[in-house]
Image (cartoon, rainbow, N blue to C red; front, side, top):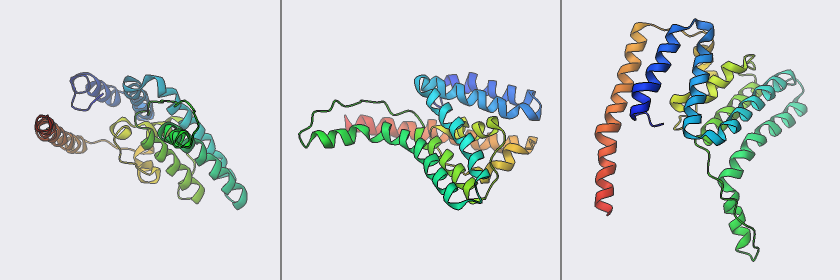
Length: 214
């Protein structure tokens, strides 16, 4: 779902805002998580479970890392394993065929996997890894709420295009957020400015480039 598309602007975004401001503070993370998962499922339904697995794995890995933080050797081994699992998924989807092709160039005949790269896998993988590293360092406590951690990793405005945000930088906004009319106005102006640049400038330049290339 593209941010400048009709489904997003006329249906998805209004639904998110309506539900978000209608529920009490304790339920806001649930709303963000549900809509973020729906947003991802819309574009990549068959790989949504992979993202859910990564989030769940990192949640429990973070809790274990925090409990073993004082035991340096043990925590290092746990951190390496915890990082290797989501990084392994990323490597398989992104580089498996490259390595198979390299082996085949030496005379082997291994069929390519031809796996489609899941949308946003790099962004949510590295956000999850940054969370685990921060917990291991003691920069933040392990998040006790799976829903809050999942809302951080899946947050739809940055899920497919970044940027990668450290949990330590947004923890307070997730656990103790405040909304005001002034903040809403400021956010809306930023969104409209970006939308205008996308529709009026970026899309038109892309169309001009395409026509010139042809």
